[in-house]
Every structure is written in C-alpha cells, then in structure tokens.
Length: 467
Image (cartoon, rainbow, N blue to C red; front, side):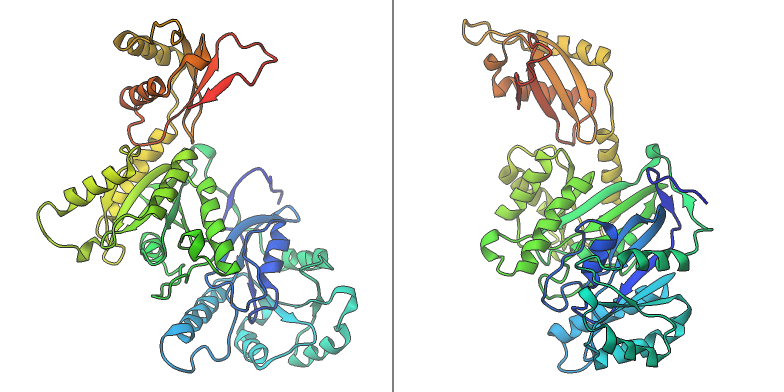
C-alpha cells in the first residue's frame, strides 16, 4: 500500500517506547521523529505523561509514543508526594502498553537493574509485538556484555545509539516490519480539519483536569504537585460532529520562579504550542483571580492571531451570589484592556460546568478564524467606514485610503493601502479594526491590519507598517 506523506492518515499502527528512567527513550523518540519534540535531560523521570506524535518512518504513517520511566519502588514508601506521582507515571505507561501495536523496550548497555528485570517480566505477555533495543552502544561500547540479555529468551537484540544515530536505520526497518498497515485509512480532507486547542495557564489551574474531561480520557496525569505536566499531552475527541485536538501544556510561571532546566524547557514548549493551535483556552483560577502571567500569555496568543477563550476555572467553589460572574468578568475586562473581544466563560473542570459552552465558543471562534471576505464586499464596506469617519485633512496628517484586501485566515490579516503611510495614526487603524470586527463577522478574535503604501513599487517591499 502506497502512502502520500503530504496527506493525513488515521488508524495508524502505534509504536510505544518503554523502559526505566534515563535509558534514552525521549532521545530515541526525537531521533525517530527527526525533530526535538520530547524534553530530554539527564535527570531521571523527566517524561511523565505519554507524549504522542504522528510521523512517517520509511514513508509509512505511524503513531509514536514516548512514555514515563518504569520505577521499581513506585508503590512503596510514604503516601503522597513523589511516590504517588511515580505510581501515576508507571500506571499510565502500563495502560499505554496494552493498546500498543509495537513495543520498543529500551535498555542501557552494560547497566542492567532490578527495574529492567521486573519490567521484562511484565512485558512477557506482549512478546510477539516486542522489540528489544540496547542504547548507548556508540562505537561498540559494552556490546559484548549486553549479549547476556539473550538469557531472557529474546530472539533478537538491536544495539543502537539514540544520541549519535548509530544503527537507527536498522531499528526503523524492524519497527516497520512488525507494524500492520492494512487498516490505515486516509483522514478527513483539509476542509474538515480538527479544531486545535491549546490549554495554557499557570500551574495548578486545572488544565490537565479539563483536558481529561473534554477527551473523556485519563491522558494527562493529575496531581496536586505543581509542575506535574512537563511535555505537551495531545488528545482528540469529537463534539457536535466536529473533530478537536487538545494540547495540554505545562504550567507557565514567571521567569524569575523557573529554577530548573526541565521546567524551563517545559514552559518554552508550552508557549510554542500557541503556534500549533487555532484557539487558546487560558485557564484562570477564579479564586486567585487574574495575574500578570495570565495577561502575558493572552497577549502572546493575541499577537499570533489565535482565538482566545478565558476560562474562569473552579467556579463550582465560588460564592453563589447573584452578580459574582458579572463582577469577575468586569474585573478581567478592566485588567486586560485591549482584549475586550475575547469571550470569558465560568467553568469547572472538576464537575464539567461550562464545558459545552466552552466548546460551542471554540466552534464559533473557529468559524471566524477561517472566514474569508472577498475583496469586492470588503472595499464596499471600507467606503462606508471612510464616509462615517474620514481620515484627517491636515498638511502633515493627510492621507487617502485606497483599498484593502484580506491576505490570510488563521490568523486573520488584512492589508490596507494608503497614499502616505507615515501619516496613518494608530487610532485610525484601531477604528478600521473595530469596524472589521463589528461589520465583517470577526467580533471575538484578533484582527491584524498591515498598512502599505499604494505608491510602492514592485521592488520596494519594505514600505509597510503593521499596526
């Protein structure tokens, strides 16, 4: 069966990378993807939630999953804290294994532990779909002593170096050979692409709880320990016949409070999901109120032209007074200033309060983000706006607005051509932007306007001013 790498496919074989902490699973994950997707660090236990990414290996579509490390003492010791979190990680890894089509067990050359031995025992029921790879064997390092692993009954052992790329091609061939592509189907056409939503906010605002509720799964680990989510956890679901992809992210704190390399990479990865999303659900703790960090996240999403929904979470424990929501909403509007267009919704990730309204709003915003205004109707509207509020006529402030075009969707962007670009004030651009929102159907999303000179020559491409 031939596959087109420019198309999207569903029902792909699932390949899961497993092993104890710090054997190089995330490094191998990134190597197979040919991109940095999972966070890698020498600290054991960096990966907690399964990290999922669809990719092509040898021109074959696969779903690749990086998992948290298996720890032997995950269910021992005092209740709560790290032990509880380790238990959640191991439980999630074991659940992922059950649904896998191919399992790659990663071991470390010359280092065989009790955790490895117990994990091998747990994997015996899955022997037919198991591939055993010994990592960190660059230059033949510790290959001889690693052959002792054959005593566990493995038919083959593959020696690789995820960091250096040694014999990765051979491992890829084995993965493809064990995968069944007969059930792979071409996914939805571009016009029915999923709405991609990134959930962002400070730590412990309920992002993972909301993600699990909307996806009707336990994809994201939930814990009271701040920073539980590190990598981006991706989930998919259908609501009102619309496909959604949800990106659960690490909590974003101020730079001054980020002290570990792992959290630094987690925060940066969370911020980058804005580029991968159509809409951002900004989770705000309704009890704590708005923070400067919330404002920075919203401003960044707005700059990138993403739809923004402010979700006031934990509303189920807020006072039941009649005007509580109106008071909080007005406070948010006051503090956000220029983002009066963004919807504000009271939700409870714990109980499901407001979840339907949240998704209905996302569908509505997506409709605005993907709307295209033809040039004719756009310039007819522009004429009306100019009559209602003509440009200034002073010697230094005078300019003429010639015409406008919409140049992109998702994000929505317009280019307005004028006679004297430097005479155009930001207040006049704001007037045009507000008119576009109100009259053209973009009421709840960011709209970018770029001002260009109508006298610009074909070779003078820098006479423009985005506002």
